[in-house]
Each structure stands twice: as C-alpha cells, then as structure tokens.
Length: 114
Length: 110
Image (cartoon, rainbow over all chains, first blue to last red; front, side, top):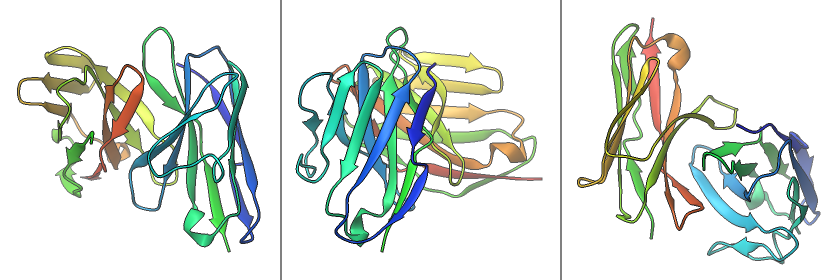
C-alpha cells in the first residue's frame, strides 16, 4: 500500500478565490490522480498528474480551472481556481502502487465555497 | 463511455448474515476490478482487487469476477455492524485509469 498525506483536510473559502491542495506520498509511485466527490455521489476523475509535464485532464475539466503540478514522483498539487459554490466538494488525491496496480486514496480535502 | 453500474441500495442485512454486493461494467477491455469501502465522511479504502475469472477470498470477503457476463460481486460473510458503509466497485482500463460505480450503501443491523 501507500501512505498518502493530503492537506488541507478541509477549508471554507470565499467565492472568487483559489485554493491549493497538496498531496505527498511516502513512496515512489507510477501514477497520481486527482478525483472529486460531490455530496452523495461517486468519484469523478479530474486529471492524471504527470511528473514534470502538463497534467492530462478528463472531459469537463480544464487546466485554467484546475491547474495541477507534479514536480517529482511523490508530490503533487491541485489548485481550484476562481471558486464558486459549485466547486464545493471533496477532492481526493490517489496513487497507483507500482507493484500491485492498486489505487489508494488520501484522506481527502473537503472544500466549502461560500 | 466507461460505466460501472451498482444498485444504490440501501442493502439491509442482519448481523451475521451474508451481504451480497453486485456490479456490472460496460468495457470488455477492462482487466482489473476493485472493491472499496467508504465510511461516511472518510475516503475510500481498498478491500479487494480481482483480475481473473472466478473467486478470490480474503478473510470474510470474497470477490467474484465473470468477464463473460461483465459482472463483479463482493460477498461479506458474517456481516458486522462495522461493515455498514458504502461499497464502491471500480474497473481499470487503459492500464491506468480507474472508473467507479455510484456505490451501494450497506446497513448491517445488530
């Protein structure tokens, strides 16, 4: 498995501001992903964080709104830009472990936008 | 469009019974499947992974995969109140992308 530290665990933000979420994993992993989970819903993949290059975004998500960085194999950030109440959600960092191909999640960042 | 379908529940079982959770998937190219447990307010926790047709057992949990029918299930034996949670089924495609079902809420009654 992998130990994933994600912060902040929660935050309350004002409309129009931006928030950066950090994700640190305790071992080198091949893939890092960012998911969103809206209340009562399942997980939606936002993007794959690629080391040293631009993230790969899923349909409906764009870099201007969700810029992602991954400077090395164990760290990534997701920024939620120009927030609106519709961005209120839980954002989850996840990693795929090399040996098993299994996906593990951080504890999540619960974001509330007023 | 990659899809995983699950009955949203809630599925209610008495303590000690067998809970049976099911999902179907749309992508025949998917090779790997996973079951996650998610407690309210917490992040998903991996319970089982299964890659081959047939059954895979781990303690009280048994995962079953039938690729011909595109069907994955999870059996929980001797269900406990602590098993009450939402169970997410997930499939992997393109060797690194995971897609999730909407989850089945399980309620184990003491």
